[in-house]
Image 1 (cartoon, rainbow, N blue to C red):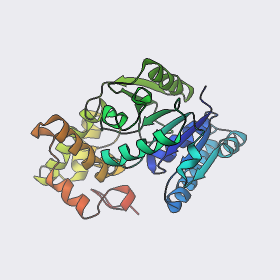
Image 2 (cartoon, rainbow, N blue to C red; image 1 turned 90 degrees about the horizontal axis):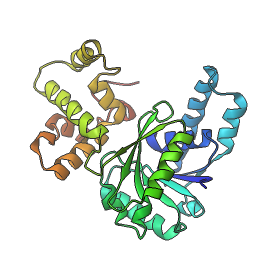
Image 3 (cartoon, one colour; image 1 turned 90 degrees about the vertical axis):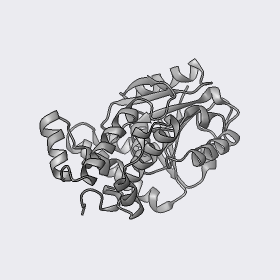
Length: 282
């Protein structure tokens, strides 16, 4: 039975994942090596919960209970008794494999290790452990507290029992788990990132301004958010990392990242989190 959930990485995705588990009654350990990142995560979780209270979707007592079930730490060792762990660190295969290797040596053998990766092979990550049958992908959508779908990715060695546990957890969180095969980008980003990349090329080639491109996709195709505003929201560095995984993993030139995207990331224009991307943010 899953009672204690660990989340490693307190960035945008990590603190959102920690929040939804804590809201659903789990004791949560949110771990990050950076104290400022943890402080920011706590502030953002409190703000998110307050919005739910203001909208009448959460009681004050439930908000306080959620915060009471959440523990923040800089020590990976605080996950030693976790029943289930979700990794939400940088989208880099080597970094993830190193973390899973450490978690494998630290936690009980029955603990399931999940990755929130949006594109990297679960089989590759699981091979860094001695329990690949208990390694799977649990790709939440951003913003985690609001989006109801979770991609569940089965690696080559992932067991049926591990997948069943992850599916049941999604239900406990009020979310729907949809299984995807272990291919670069899975379902969501295999489709989404080429669309975003084409929007980057459209800006590069002067086909339209970011405002015009986003307006067409919203007003003409009924997208809730334009592709360039969405890319800024995701993080342009994250978009670049996923496109690189698609390009390298599938070997098709159609996935090569737009030079404009590479240039913007090199300049530190990462979107909302840096204050500037295709748009500027206060």
